[in-house]
Image (cartoon, rainbow, N blue to C red; front, side):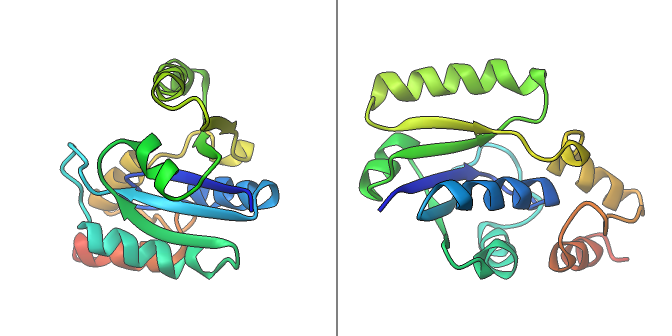
Length: 159
């Protein structure tokens, strides 16, 4: 079985994330969407909330599993018997950081490949940070995130 891991903070999951998951599902038998639990950022949503929102969205896809991890991604990949890490690239600005991470992961565990996937053009500008900002300022996020996420953002910002 060809298994891949799509790691991230997913705070919150966006339509761009969903697009990358759907693309990865065409390439792998199983895609593990893995939420980093030791995130240094101060997330808007708790780990449990992020896992729940992912299960309500990408978790409904047959060959997707949603879980959490902490520690080194490549060690988690080894534990899960994954052959690849999926990373989304929206713009050239993402590439430098992602390229460095891919090379470091290769040094740590060369049996795990990094696969870069680009979302549809309509999602290249989209980020969780921007979605949270729009929601905080009272804007409509429904075209940027799945329905359950839009609802959860509304509750967070009391709208």
